[in-house]
Amino acid sequence: MYNDVDRVLFDETAIQSRLQTLAETITADYLGKELAVVAILNGSLIFAADLLRHIPLPLTLHCLSIASYHGGTESSGVVTFNQLALPNLSGRHVLILDDILDSGLTLEAVSKRLTEAEKPASVRICVLLQKRKERIPAIAADYIGFEIEDEFVVGYGLDYQQRYRNLPFVGVLRSEAS
Ligand code: XMP
Image (tube, rainbow, N blue to C red; front, side, top):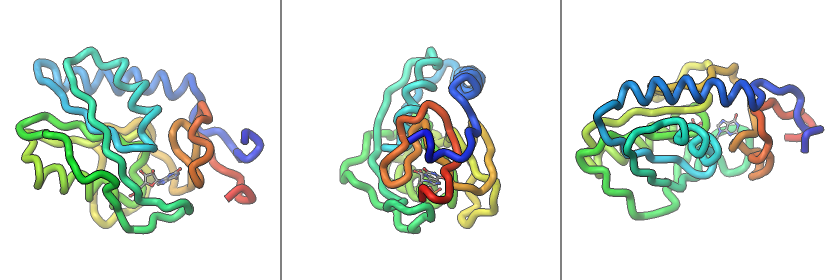
């Protein structure tokens, strides 16, 4: 598995240190409020587990299972909600967590659906990674771990055909492996 990685972009130490800073910013921004965190599965699982342990605020955690990649390295453009029921977020301060903002289609669909169906008090987006690229929709994250170039990455929750999520770092796959 490690041999399939061309280069490491962010190792464990860099990720944990950045998450600590990100968590401090989020904590300061939401002081005195109760957060409703919505983690997008499967990609944000490891990111959410590490980030939330650095946020000492009262919060509830909700998971949404979404499929948008369907196994390749290009976004399919089709966002599927794998569960019918949404968490009750009416009047709540919602923080959506995802692994990466790439085309933006997933986060746009999720924030639109949650906003329309649940009427939350506020909705913000936090991602581990944001790719530097133009997007239609013009969506941007409110909290970003790292900005990266427009290349396919794996590890720390991110997969290629469901593999590599357990790598402790974020890295670029060798072209032969994809
Ligand atoms: P977008 O923003 O394109 O992203 O709707 C949808 C989902 O696609 C996955 N994704 C990636 N997964 N390496 C990955 O392992 C990548 O470079 C990558 N880009 C997008 C990810 O699950 C994201 O939530």
